[in-house]
Length: 350
Image (cartoon, rainbow, N blue to C red; front, side):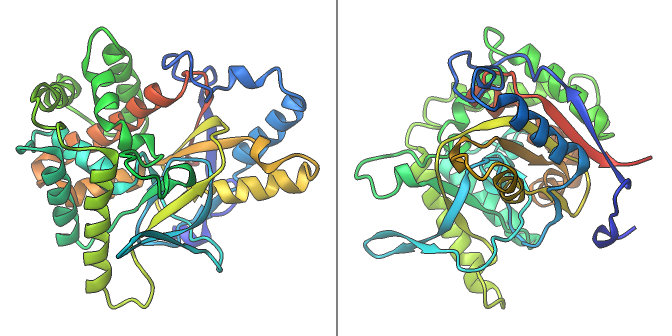
């Protein structure tokens, strides 16, 4: 069955965790529970769930690279100029990209650490991640937020999956935080994706993350900004080497505030859940509401993790790398949400 002919009823959307992951930052504003006192909550919630359940925003992937899980709107593509960053407005429909925490380079970076590819420092390992993916002709994306662009001295990017990669890894590898919960959630998601692992494999991943974190030099000179600079350089190299007239790997600028109510996990190859289409559908049904007040969704495309693993590590580490990639998505959710976002999963119908 081709991805292009995926028809209604050939997929199923299942609410696998109605109450969310159940752990996270209780002070986070990214919360389903904290939406319930808002005007029009019931109507917005019902329509959003309908969009997810019916696959109304399930679309074909149209780009070679990927994007972040982030539900905010895209305003343009970021390019580096001699005097700093410049954002080129998007004058054509936004391409539909698979989605991962921080984009593919950040997720693959954590995957490689998880299986033990740990060098002297984070920035060098991120550069090596890009080279490994490029050797398999895999390119990836990233994003910044408008609120962090052109701020002198700001070492963050507005993408917490990049800015707080070490904190998310810490959440998953510290028994006093969410290590046990993240391992349990990751195990359940991997089973749903039919990924088989040997006993102790997930603990091996968290131990490797802890090994990197315990090295005081590893993240010492690595910030969200410095990691983005590494990604920019990687993207520039692959774009220059490409025969395409368009950039095949981009960094996007996002605008607005986080307003994610749901977490969508997609298991269908060649497809993704389009946050832009979800917004368009909700705007049509609620034209009088500010678009910033409409529900958003975090989206994770598991087939993209599988693809990245094939380029990031050796074949014998493939399953472990996939597990590390899934674990990082769960880990960043524990850092940026309060754990109450209902979790849906898309799979092919039996």
